[in-house]
Length: 494
Image (cartoon, rainbow, N blue to C red):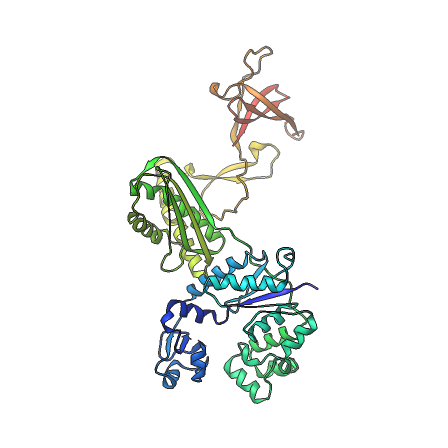
């Protein structure tokens, strides 16, 4: 039977707060939902629990129990940044990792296929625990057979657990106290009054009664707990850091010119992050110097962003402070992103969108100077001949473009509005056939023919189309009108 592992970073916001304030570690500490006296406590450490300070309390109430209580809110961006760090480390142990969308710090991992790299699942779990410890995070690992079973196990223990069979996992989960799971305080207190203090007793409750008495989150937890197992993992894809490199022709020591080189590279990285629905949280850069030395630096914006106007001044300040001994000959930029909020992506799209009102004003001036038909677009038609498959129509309204990303740059066939008649090829041309400019050279490769025939209803058409390559590498699209016995240039491939 396939195994599923769960890695839990217990009270991740609390761990982040203690990383930010290590001097608080020896006293009671609480994470609150807002920086206000009426804020609600979400997480507490063991020193606070000894003083009977629990999640769900008002911060003012907790202060009445201990004046030494230290509390603060943790920004959502800090939580996402730490979760991204944990995720990147877990990818070193399995390519299939799914972070929880509901609870920060919970990750499900597929340990399949790693048997030859580690002596046992216990060894693999211990390696993950040690690696996260080096990053400053305390973690608990459970290797079981169901998603809910491994998740509930991590909430009930402080050490790694590997189950030998699914029966052992089920028996363990049934003994897990409900106080260890994140029930709402009101729901937890009601269940305890009913004498239900373990998951096994909670699982035996009828689903219909739960729907009448409790909220949707409690019913969903019951539904997940009563299943044999959840659906297959929905892993977060491994996204490599976005990287850009530029080699300079001459050593550059002028900061302004250097920033002009960096700006388009950085802008393209931000655009790629936006397509991933991410924002930049960290930028690493390497400066290769003319004396063969190199300088590696990193910077982080105040909050993860897609705004290049925030990043360029930070780069300017960082590079100005570097004691560079010679000019820069190579640039390497690498950025890490985290999941963006909808508002962040909308702000980025607003900065990238064109000013349609200004464009329409410019079109009006062009029409006034050059005539009403000066601004046109190609309207496609279902026609037989290439030159009849489009017509030029006046632009009445310009909409925002929505380009579709292409995995590779496609070839484009440029079709002329009117075919251009070519000089007939002589039978004994010494230098070959010239279909373009003289400097393009003669035709060296011919692909075809492709026959287009018809038009019996009005005028007979019979054409043999060819793609021809000249000596300079240009590809032309030509055809022979077999009725008129003449050659025409229809377009070009770019």
